[in-house]
Image (tube, rainbow, N blue to C red):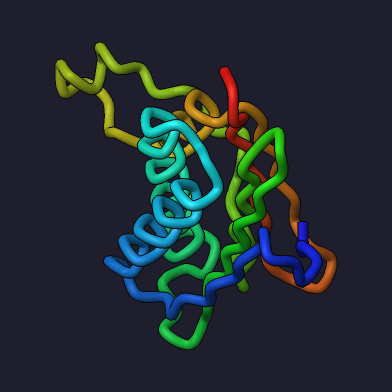
Length: 145
């Protein structure tokens, strides 16, 4: 999704600095509130945006300081749509769901929680490796359950 220039779309570009996902979270919350997303769903949106931005910085961009993370927010009457794009080689989106019990018992390393949260909190998720380089995750949160 590269939304059209309308009054229901916003794009932010972040430097590849861990911690800046908080800026994306704050932007997502403000955008969603202004566009009427219910408060409980705003918390879900903030979580998926933070996880996607963090994954883009760490895994997609590989921590490279010169890389950027672009995030688009778009509101429709049905949903808030968010796209997060990195400038790297992307990451494997086939990571299995984490085994919470094994992790709690310290028998397994906690890997894959970000994608697990995204898949379970968003109403729709797609991943794409871009031909020109980079990786894109598109997520949607419905206005109504």
